Image 1 (cartoon, rainbow, N blue to C red):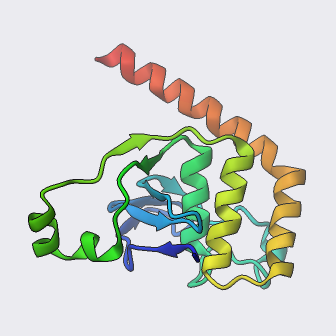
Image 2 (spheres, one colour):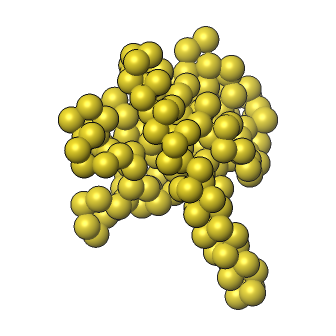
Length: 165
């Protein structure tokens, strides 16, 4: 099975044209048949400007995969325990007839799981093997710092939310 993004359109807002906030869920089915969703802040692909001609931070073939990866790194991703298909997602009559709803739960992927999911999503969006290898190499060299920073920020945010309640 090939991975596939199940949301054709994702609403976003931005104040600077570089950083975005998703207003609707981004849903992805990976090549193993698992479903993930995120609604996160994103800067697209964290690639240096000199590399943008080859791997742009935003674009038709890359943006959704990078947003999914940001959701993983920032601990803002959920996995679904219910096996449903695209028809269930878009067809109200099918949902009403089955009388079941997807059960989403928080997922805390490791760095390697996050990077695997990015590779799977890039493959689903048509990235060739060489480009995906370049992204993997960049993640091996630089990604650990972003992973650590994002997880620290997520922990601080979670603590602040519990103190406010």
